[in-house]
Length: 312
Image (cartoon, rainbow, N blue to C red):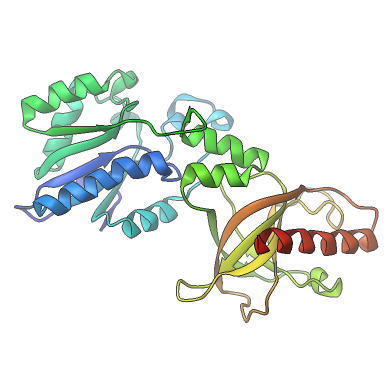
């Protein structure tokens, strides 16, 4: 079940709600530890597991538009990922000016009013909430205790001695550090888009590509990647090499970034199909070549480099 607001949530009576709270951009390993605790507790008690997340990022209220935090997982992706984790309901609360004014000391009671079956909250140890982000784990525990609510606080997970965070993953994506990003996420960075018509230039060069419509808030580094893709969950993953960027050799003027994938095995995918792409390794940054012959030679080298990585 997915809800667009706390105002329209309808849950069955008699089943306690175990609710994880957070932005959860990317649903990385640290987020997963919080959410899995809610899911397992709900299963043990015959309750329901839920996630309360927010859209857009709260920074949109407090910063200039070009300075707001850009998310690297769409809301639709997040809801699907949480459903696969076994979460029973997802509430994507719009982060409005009115919502931002709720005082920290009033927030637990506000949640209990909106969600009468609420039994426990699950958060990360660095969770902050309420007006001015003044609420802490300590205040949350104290205020929830008065309402008969339990609070579970998960310790931050670390990789290479540093805490896992969405901010850290954004930096990895901007640098093209896919292996590190994927290690922090706990799964391959994944995008979904529909195949759209192209100019067939790749086909004339001997490397047919699938043009995939995809416009993220946070764009990864422009360049060439080793990837794998599939059209539905029943299919096997097909290895490929993809270019994401502005295509400076063949495009002029202002253009939108485009994801182009050349698959290393035959596929029947065509215009209109929706593809899921996993980004596994950064091959090289995007660059401008002197002409189509040089571009063709580089594409062949990129194809071999991606194939070598995917072979292991």
